[in-house]
Amino acid sequence: MRRFLFAAATLALLAAGPALAQAPTGKSLTIGMAAADVSQLDPFRATSTQDKPVVSWIFNGLVRFKPGSTSLETLEPDLAESWTRSDDGRTWTFALRKGVKFHGGYGEMTADDVVFSLKRAADPKTSSFSTDYAAFETVEAVDPSTVRITLKHPVPSLLGLVANYHGGNVLSRKAVEALGNDFRLKPIGTGPFAFAEYKPNESVRLTANPDYFRGTPKLSGILYRLIPADAARDLAFTSGELDIVYGRQDQRWAERFAREPDVSVDIVRPAELALLHLNISHKPLDDVRVRRAIAHAISQAQIVQFKGASVTEPAVSIIPKGYLGTDDKAPLPAYDLAKAKALLAEAGHPNGLTLTAIQTSLPTMLTAMQIVQGQLKKAGIDLKLDVVDHQTFHAQIRKDLSDAVYYAAARFPVADTYLTQFFDSASTVATPTAVTNFSHCNAADAEIRKARTEPDPERQKALWKEAQVKIIEQVCAVPLSEGLQVWAHKKSVDYGYNFKGAIHLGPVITEATDKK
Image (cartoon, rainbow, N blue to C red; front, side, top):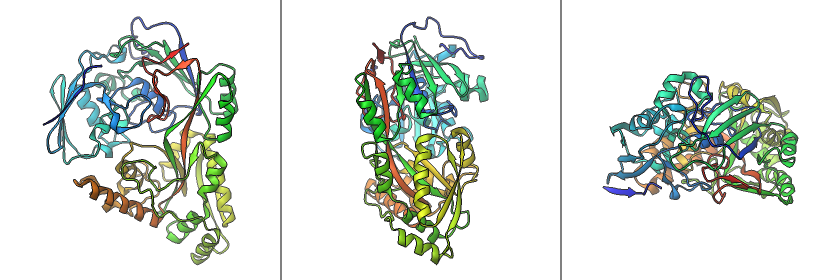
């Protein structure tokens, strides 16, 4: 056995739950997000940019990403104090931290909660990340403080799947069963902050968890304000209403606020890869020549130039840069307007064609899509945008209603996760196993699935590379750019760590975070 040993380093105010006793009073933090509303706060369904930061303040995993880091190499203990791995890499045993309490009087966390959570994360009926756990053969409670996971085959970076990210978050079985569908907006976790109140289209309020196992937070709570309008959000920040603000992926914005004497601007990874997914089940996109014409009509360089090189980078593949398995030299189609027009004519559209896309009103994403709209127009492609609020956007694109879908996302940094969720045909939207395959792509199913069980790391990388080449050749999606995360905070805020990365798409607020 290989052994990994580490030392051990609610208020709920729900209509359905009791309050935490003796919550601290004092300084609270107000954070502004560029969204009209949250989608939901069940961590297994929280896929939107505005949802993920809140989830990270409420929940824990067996291990955690070190605050401020996105590295798999620096994962550290969270709800597990130690773990062992069998020599063949298929059996992992976790020794749980004792005395950890769930918010809202839901009792002590035990192995039963961990088993319940991981099984729920692996169920497509209750999780958007179920495919990540396809290799889990059994999850069992050895005793109240020990969990054993048996895998069908070794999994790359298994610890990342039980980290405080997506399906790795641990839920209270009692709370999920008691609250039912209400859990999606009344979450119960073990983290430093507990859910207190949700006001639709306005805010989410959290309060400090005085029973947090790492110690009582220095802050009394967090007010997470939902402010979709850029101007209103900026004004709230400059006037002192906000301590932290979600910035724009715009170089001028970053430069403007960097000049403010009481403000620090944070430009961090992971970048969100923006792809234009092309629905190959819709005519005329079923013709690969039309899809290739679209790819040649789009200039990444122009998009990066418009947004600014300090906050945006060119994409290198259909997987984000820096992931395990990303092909940094993938054969992306070059910008070539003449070739785009020639391909359209060859496909029977010499006078151009019209496409429709459901598009979020979220300013950063809408602006990027408008740039693409202008580029396609030059090739004779009229892209009509049906602009809706962000929550409606997420609902409608999953109903297979759009010819093209602009989607920007960061995922667990292993190629398998991105390929599975966006390009495996089993993940096609509007199917029973739907995730986020908006294009109906099936170009590399064999390579994606074989790579999951490939024991040789080098062969596994080769399969991921083959998958990327095939998907790019069939133009299931067109890479647009990689947008770095842009945040700003008043210098009176001390995160308690060096904010260099945000795997949860926002700053992690911990028990050590303080406000002067």
